[in-house]
Image (cartoon, rainbow, N blue to C red):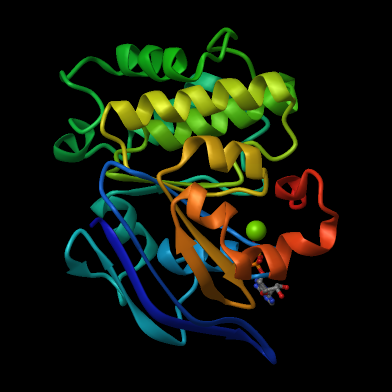
Length: 254
Ligand code: ADP
Ligand code: MG
């Protein structure tokens, strides 16, 4: 187990965004959090990566209680995350973005992804090849299409030294071809031993890719299981998929 969240609560004023959320993430697996809009998925990511503090509850990462750590301390410990809305610097190039990501360098953690201590440019090349971003390194972020920016964002997430990769809606808004190639990228990363926690609305993407699913609603986990179990969970079907018609019910959240 690499991550464990226990009984997390978080309110924003009167909004109870997280109400006793607990889940665990296993090493070397792909785990998904799914659930309707506003169910608290991104807030959980923000709590885990310490962008915000929980009101109560505990977070353990790699066997260590990290609940009171700061965000930079946690990223040093090995959590790398991407955001639902891609955050890039318009006036920086691909190379500069990846240099910044790599400069978080901690060789002990970096060895997790890069087998040898290659020079920086080789690391950049390797990350570019992993994500298949076919653009010159000197291209500015502002000159990339939406899909290419999603890939660069993923490349940055991979380049940062980490032992857990957290992706908030990695295929939101991308075309089906790119969605399939991102699926293959994540599979390949997982084959190399990456532990991945992702939030995703695209149910077909999730069902086809991940090992384990947590379903969130109203700030807590209401079901968990393998993709098969979730697809056949009567409670999940009744609560979320049942009112979308009998056909294609699995696509209701897309
Ligand atoms: P999801 O990612 O599952 O769509 P979010 O975690 O973004 O859901 O949001 C959960 C709830 O918390 C929503 O009601 C949202 O409006 C609220 N919320 C999230 N972040 C904030 C914030 N910074 N301030 C106030 N309310 C917030
Ligand atoms: Mg969200």
